[in-house]
Image (tube, rainbow, N blue to C red; front, side, top):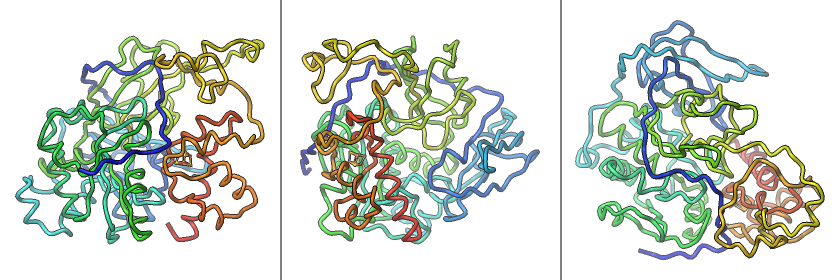
Length: 449
Ligand code: SF4
């Protein structure tokens, strides 16, 4: 196994991590899916109000990439299709019939069966099974086109962003599905690499022996895009695909059962929750049903996903196709009087401006406050010091401000893994990751992605 020391990573010390206990939260009368929350797609809905659906029935697909399909997590009847501004489809609401009727996607397949299947068949099952968007094609992080052949596929076993589920929690009891999913991915591309953290707590030897790389570093060392950056030997590999281990398990579940896997293990975390834990939830369950203990939603922010890369959602939303975490943070609306004249033992600091820099192992009770307003870039270099793919976010931003995309590309803008660390550490509160991602999206449009 090759060892990689990832430079420029950062350990986020946030209080409120989930306890290692698992609860089941699967019961609701209504479920929903939100096409508007799936990035970079143009959804085309194929159901109408009153239609009966089963688990695995097609609900919508991406008009730009028709093999990217999204399936129903529940059997029942389409109750409502909710549109937002500019007719974006906010949610497709389904009333459950509690019958759990399932569409058959394929015959159940073992690892040995997968060896006998053609690559075209395996791709087609994953596409029809609604899991094609588990793959992200670099550098634009879109689901791959139908016939795209990846130069290599990078699998990330571990999550190091707070508070995505830890690998030993989601692998336990699902080793077989992980190995089945991985063998299917290896059929799609022989050059499949599995990155495992040096701190990985997975004990199962059959899983550990699949790892090709051991990654040393804090967040986001275990992002598959970071492994690609360190492992690639030519620019041809820039179009590789990435996938996370939890999605590999879902592919394994689909192949082993022949039906759409409609349950997922998520973390429910945040220092204001009494019971931060892991939960098996049914896809599409209302967020409010998962966050039952909260009385006043006006004082909190709900984030679906990791602390830096997640999306802000509302209690009326549903657990969506790409959600593996729900986090709750208090809204930080209070301003602190003359805080600059205080030693700052109570505030986290990256730039060591505050005395809290001495409290190395303290976990901080974060809220949503930026702790300051937007200012001009002071060229401090904090963003450069944390960029895991060694780009220069502050310089890139200045080039992008004058529409010099070519120079930004020369500086590696397309290597950005959208980890959000540059924004987190910026003392001028500049949304650097958003600027870089917008530039990538402009380039993506130019090349027809
Ligand atoms: S540019 Fe910013 S968001 Fe992109 S990889 Fe570097 S630190 Fe992360």
